[in-house]
Length: 592
Image (cartoon, rainbow, N blue to C red):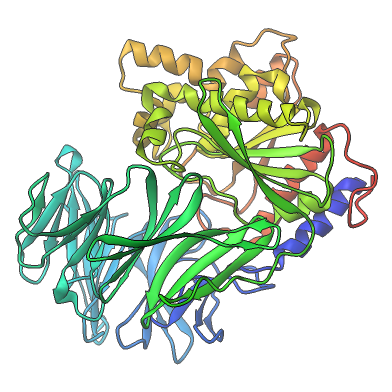
């Protein structure tokens, strides 16, 4: 083992001791406690109900809080089955014949039965907990069914292609409306579901009445109020009483928006913890108290409380291993690109830097806690997260500017961020490593191959690198619109320029190529490993340094600490190897 790998592994182990708690839901939390390897169900007082083998994806406590319905997977491949946890006994009983994949559950008010959408078998299952009897009804072909709390027995959301999503009160059969893309529905007031339904959709929030006078397009009948902000991306929503709180991302940072009857009465940003930048990642009411999930690059995740009268209770300050600074850099077309850089205290001059990105599907790329960040910073390097068009950092126009036929704009933005960091003296090309996972890997690879002069190396993890064959991946057909693949000759021509694998396979021998690490996930059910294998082969044939690494036991779903440790250490080790000037006096004894 090399010295730098040993030092990085030690720093990574220290950072991994921090857990990742979950928001309280019905008196319970789903999260990973400090110094534990997997997630479990815990009471709000911190005591553990159960910490089973395998992977818990979701929990749904019963109204009487005696049972917890769970979605449990034996591996990290995201294919799960249904289970019931007996809270008093701390036992898990699985129903392997009810097969799930991020599905929804609605309990009966008396906690004696529940309904489950079992999407892997396209069935709606009713389970009687007293008799253990099951009743299954087939879900129609080519539709998506989801259940949400609300009304007397829940809400049904039925989505069907271009017709959008229709929301129905299951008890009365009343249609509450139709939306082009419905993300979530919930009661306006959990204590009194009759007050109305809060619908989170792609255009914002609608509060609608329960009387069956629904919203359809721009119709106002049945609409209690509507809220939207074209410059903000909604991330989460919580409602209680007359209060609705929206967690959104605007201008590259998380904000909390307080609404009363749809009117915005307050907007606030997350606080900072010492020299770290904090991001609010999730919100939720439990027993009338609003809880926030808060974290930063050097601040481990914590759950804090917030009331109307008090500001956010800040988590403990981060250890003084570094500081996070926001930089606003110019793009070549004059737009402002934001990147958050976490670096050692007092770092001066160019330092080795890992620059991460995503830039797609309207998903915000915010500065969050990952054990690799403090580990790399303790080693003397800097870690950055770039916000690129196509993501969800600045609202609808920002999203559309890097989507479809304009997807190459995202790669150009990453190149502009790299140039800006180099021009500012924060790093140098021989010290810069680009890194991205899934879609982010496509962007990182595309930038590195198109602009090899900007970086020493690049890393992709579980990335669909062949954009001309997206349909080969299990979920690839859903990604075509993101990359502008409508099947026309014009779109295929654009994809040949955009596709990292296509560009790599066209490289002549001797072309300048940054070093490459291609990571595939051993239990991935979204992205095939084939593209990464071909990328490694193409770069090697062109004379470049390229290697493949498989993360055994890791997938796109929930992963255990051991698998994440091996993955994180491999990426950090690669970055240390390809950067040429790690400081000899790196902090925490990390000298080479």
